[in-house]
Amino acid sequence: MALTAFQTIGPLFGTLVAIPANEKQSGDMSEHGNRILRRAKDGEGKGCRMIQVFLRIVAPFEKRVEVLDVLRCLKGPTEVSKGCRVCRVLQDAEDEGALTYLVQWDTQADAEEHFRCERFRRLLPYVEMSVEPPEVEISDLDPVGGMEFLVAAIGASHG
Image 1 (cartoon, rainbow, N blue to C red):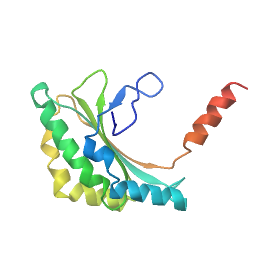
Image 2: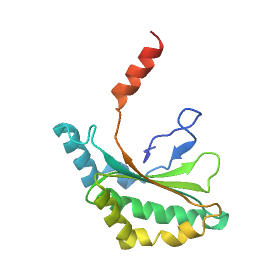
Image 3: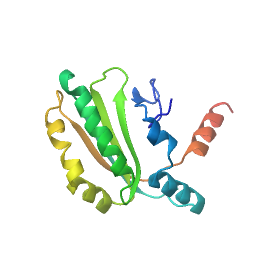
């Protein structure tokens, strides 16, 4: 089964799990996927600052499917938007109603443009109906490393 994000369960990484992608998304190479491959080939994106948008809501029980559908519909167009590095829709493993929308952008201007688009504005009523106060965090990140950093850190603990 194809996934839209990592399955992360446990105390080290939290309790978020990925939502399965539909077959069309997992089988086709999107423009976003091509852009990621080009960046990797050209060495772009590594170590570059980025803007991360984290939005967590808890959907009312009777609206969970609807909220999830809205987030999934937002995900595809966001992924191919100018400046989008990654867009994920995550569901908490311990509370199916807890949904997280996570997007990383090249620049603050790219993130702001996304917030002004009509697609994103369609999400706002669902944010307002969250049964817990929504968590919103917009961060300016400076990546430390990737897999090589993780492997080096694990290796250092055994030395």
